[in-house]
Length: 105
Image 1 (cartoon, one colour):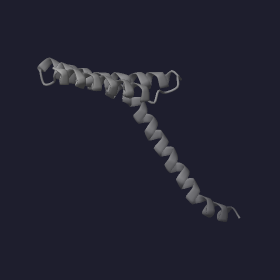
Image 2 (image 1 turned 180 degrees about the vertical axis):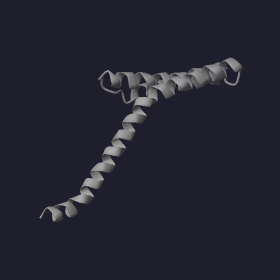
Image 3 (image 1 turned 60 degrees about the vertical axis):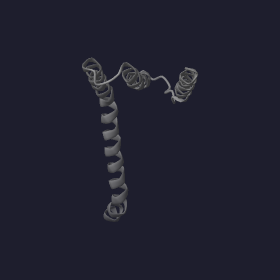
Image 4 (image 1 turned 135 degrees about the horizontal axis):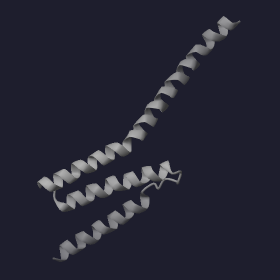
């Protein structure tokens, strides 16, 4: 009876092991993400200092990275995650306003 149980349940145990491995890898990636964002911010500062990037490009890229870092920090503290919908709508409004100003000039 135990042999039959082992044979029947082995595919399920294999799937459980795979899911645990995926979960573990996802947790490791999530834990390493703040360090990766910090490194990317350092690269952005270097690109700005060397003139490979304009101030506007830097500001846009920095805002995206800092927003993501804020979301990660909030999630680590147990606060609910913001889906970014409000921030995206604000960005679109700002872009439309800047396009209108450019057209008026």
